Image (cartoon, rainbow, N blue to C red; front, side, top):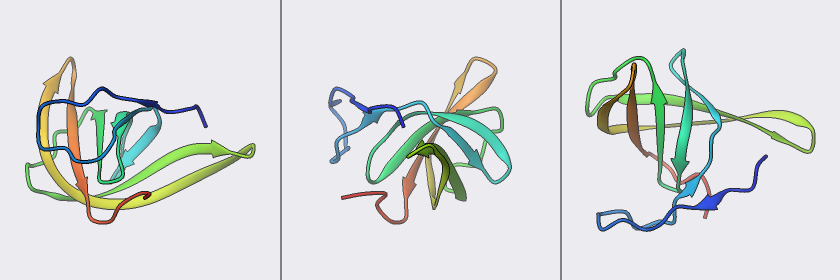
Length: 99
């Protein structure tokens, strides 16, 4: 797994450190790529636009110790913005990914 890089803090409501990390992600069958993540949320790009407030299931894919791994989580869509041919989607997670 690549070494995550901290993302500079923005003047907003975020309370957890964010890390710029490009990982494959699947949102209910729709493939995408993460931009950054924190313990409480994920920002990723995908082609399909989910409804704001929708509950979604996510699966992050990464490599650890030369093995393919998946991390399943779920959360609520809190922001959707047009980005090129797709959308940037922010999801607030139901449970933290890490401490």
